[in-house]
Amino acid sequence: MSAEPNRIPLVDLAAAHAEVATEVAAGIARVLDTCAFVGGPDVAEFEAEFAAFTGAAHCVGVANGTDAVELALRVLGVGAGESVVLPANTFVATAEAVVRAGARPVLADVDEDHLLLDPQRAAEALGDSSGPRALLPVHLNGQLAPMGALRALAEARGVFLVEDAAQCQGATQDGLAPGAWGPDAIAATSFYPGKNLGAYGDGGAVCTGNEEYARILRELRDHGSSRKYVHTRLGFNSRLDTIQAVVLRAKLRRLADWNVRRRAAAARYDTLLAGIEGVRLPRTAPGNEHVWHLYAVRVPERDKVLALLNEAGVGAGVHYPVPVHLQPAFAELGHARGDFPVAERAAEELLSLPLYPQLTAGQQERVAEVLAGALSRL
Image (cartoon, rainbow, N blue to C red; front, side, top):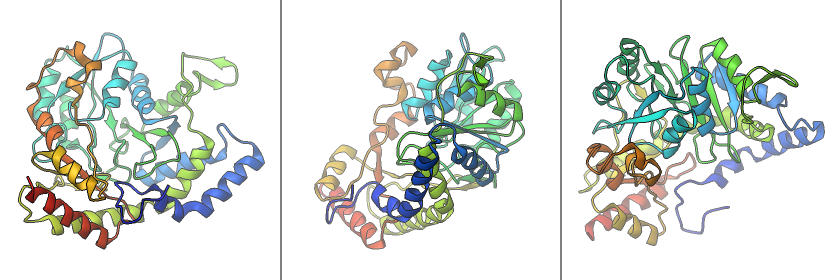
């Protein structure tokens, strides 16, 4: 659905669709003509194309990003009686996937500047060698967590490193993308519609450098089967839909350009918002090539500012206003307010501004003007 006249949406999926509509329609017609609705050639071709795009050796499409995290953990054997360290500042699905795999989430705080998993806090959460089995950093808002320090930490403690890369299709750190950090790298991603590479429904994938991991993942996603009616392990029904693969192939061909446009929009916001009292701009961590899934500023009295922006027709939004440890679903972890202060402050201050490849300079100027006005009214 298109945005209302004069309203600036947080995300404009209609504008993205307009750029791929003809190609998607032709692809869907092809699928309907061949009736290759599950596991058709478009799925295999997308997997190969996305693997090439990221630099990972293998890509295995699955039904959604939450399944992708869970299956990445399961392929490593992480499960019952074990624990996984992850940041408190993330969407609940990261922790949910850990629980679904049978393990226990162990939370750690994030750094103040980038709101990514803090290696020092992660080291404290890992404890001694008899502690958690895996480290699960989240690449948030379009940039990677500090992979050099986290990889060194995982190797030193003898734990697996699994990347939650749901928000950074096309992002790199020191030239490497999620899932491409080595022969045993493994990264989960999501193709939820609002992502930089978004489907027209749910979808996800696991990228890895390990051929054996990829083989097991393909079995796990398809009821534990590599051959029809032969099931070598307990698995899941978590296959990437063929129609979604058609959409993703069309969008993948444009993703690099769309990410360039996102970077340009982020740079324009940096300029427009510089000097506005009360606005704390997002920062890019060293070595990162950011793809700006979200452009999230920090402001005082965030909820009041959000209401004023929305009233003025600016579709700003809030992501993760309640950290994982304060969610009722995770009360059994035993945490209280104050346990992860950086994540808690971020949850109260973060405000996501409209950002998508088709956003115009004029629209951004309007966002900056309304934001400045809203802050002046506090």
